[in-house]
Image (cartoon, rainbow, N blue to C red; front, side, top):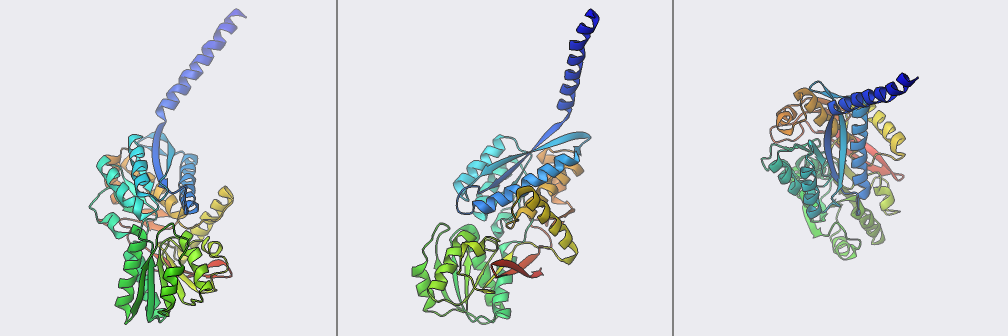
Amino acid sequence: MQLKTKLIPLAGAIAFAFAGVAAAQEQVVKIGHVAPISGAIAHLGKDNENGARMAIDDLNAKGVTIGGKKVKFELLAEDDAADPKQGTAAAQKLVDAKVNGVIGHLNSGTTIPASKIYHDAGIPQISPSATNPKYTLQGFKTAFRVVANDGQLGGTLGRYAVQTSKAKNIAVIDDRTAYGQGVADEFIKGAKKSGTINIVAQEYTTDKATDFNAILTKIKAKNPDVVFFGGMDAVAGPMLRQMKQLGINAKFMGGDGICTESLATLSGDGMGDGQVVCAEAGGVEESQKKGMDDFRAAYKKKYNSDVQIYAPYVYDAVMTMADAMVKAGTAEPAKYLPVLAKIQHKGVTGNIAFDDKGDVKDGTLTLYTYKGGKRVLMAVVK
């Protein structure tokens, strides 16, 4: 009896020791994620963060091994509020935390300044949604993106406005952010290349504005066929309402920033069926549709909400980074970075590979309109 009582704590100590060894053998891989979780486009930031968490959960459920060791992935999520200063502070915080890689940021205006901080620290960064061409034109070997850029996005919308909508008189508004100004400039270039058009007005607002009556009244006098807006859905919604109040019946076009499920709600009764045409920097062709549908269903089950726009691209960005680590046999940034640059990853959104600048190869775009308050797919183009 006495022997037994001595063995029980000994057995417990042995079990504890083994647990300690197992825990020591399990390597923690820290993935940073940055998006605006506060502010006007927090719904988009949360969608991105949800996509990252879903990928992390799936990786941990699979039991991934890197270099022969089982790893546990951890997500370090930061809020940049779509503000460049807060974005660089968030980036430095992740660098100080010694993350193995970063997914983000959502906006070009925060992604571009943050990218220098990651580059200087040698930490790979994949943006799932920043589309300004400048991001990958800085010569940073750490910078990648999994969506098409504004040159493709704005150019495609410009061609559509002229060749399909037969627009002659076009008004352009942008919110002066890196994203809004960039996509508006590329839209104008694309439209001018596609035919003879008149840019009858070029107006500016901010990404926090709610009153557009002054600029819309000026635009109304020019009688445009198309109003193009470079900015986000939180501004586009009220703008559409005010266009209706002023009797502006032009087509309303914009990039991925407005191309969300929430736009119909944000615009209230301001949106006519087929009035809005927007493009998402991404999209799957018919052969990959089932994978995307399955992802959307899994997302809805997990979060009890629909995908807004970029969650699948965030998910793929995390999975692509993890794939590079597995193939390199290490999560050490300097060692898996060259493997990431040459990766061939089959994702939910399609096949992911990067060119020498870090842009995704053969990036697709999806054109949408809205009918009955619902976003409706028009075409997937390259």
